[in-house]
Image 1 (tube, one colour):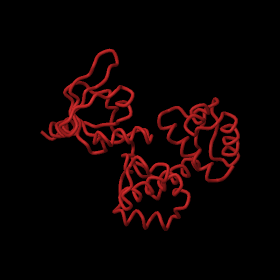
Image 2 (spheres, helix red, strand yellow):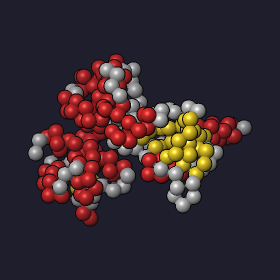
Image 3 (cartoon, one colour):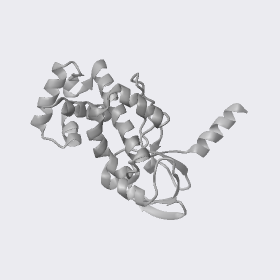
Image 4 (cartoon, one colour):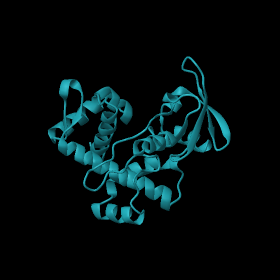
Length: 227
């Protein structure tokens, strides 16, 4: 098993741990591999002191977290390069960045970050860790948690699935896009949303992967604290 593959495991474990479920079965699903393959990878990561196995789960050690954030930093800088400089569609860059992330040295990362004018997030809205291993805490709530009449702004897309990103791009739904929730069907039905003057029905599963914030509400709350 190559060091590049083990780096991808660390990246997957970190992302799953953010959602509180870094178990071998979830890692296998995220990596699209079999359970025995995951078991072999976890043994190697544990032998290198990069993970522990509390109660059958998987947790990154301090060094494992540092390495995972380094990989994620390279990946998200590579995505910005592909979108901002090379003009690739955002739905195509995740897999390409997976190839590039293993080749970016610290010098290249620093030069790339400066050239891109120090971006805070990747094209899908996820925070880019700093060179020192610091990363901003995620903000926002799933779109499906907002009710009718809510005015929100897309913060990020939780899953970088090519099919999902292609669909959202066709609706003009990117980080920074304003969305109005027009109606919410009962019994876990779809949401009717307005984007750029057009209305679309979004299933709850898709709306659950679109993380949004309510800037108008947030601004009003700040104003009330000042008065």
